Length: 134
Image (tube, rainbow, N blue to C red; front, side, top):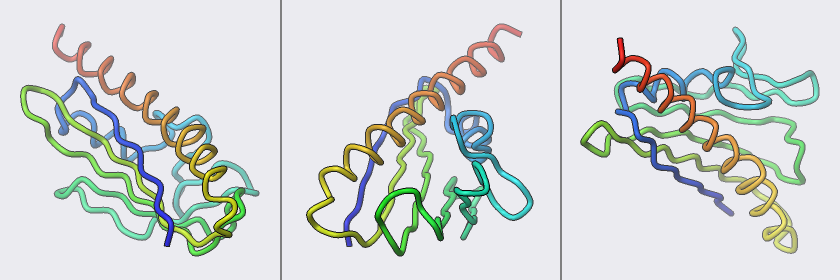
C-alpha cells in the first residue's frame, strides 16, 4: 500500500501545537472540523477515525477523495522535540494505480501536506511566541 509522508519542525512545544493540529480550521487551507468530522466542502468529506490527545494523534478517512485513490487513511502526529520544539508528521496510506504514484506524491505530499504543515508551523509558532510575551 503506498504511503505519503511529510514532516515539519515547529519552534513551539508539542503541548501548544497539538490543539492546533487537532483543529484543521486553524491551519489547513481547506479542511474544517464539524460534528461529523472535518470537511472542506460537500465534495470533500473526511471522517475522524480516532483521536488520542495523550499520544497527540488524529487519524481520518476520506471516503470520496479528490485524487484517484481508494482505501484512504491519514494520520497527523505531533511529537515533542525538547527545548520548546516539536515535529508534526502527516502520513496517508491508500491504494492507487502504480503509474500515478509520483504524481500523487507531488500533489498530495507537496501541494497538500507540505503547504498545510507550513501553515500549521507558522500558526503554532506565532501563538507560542504571543503566549511567551504575555
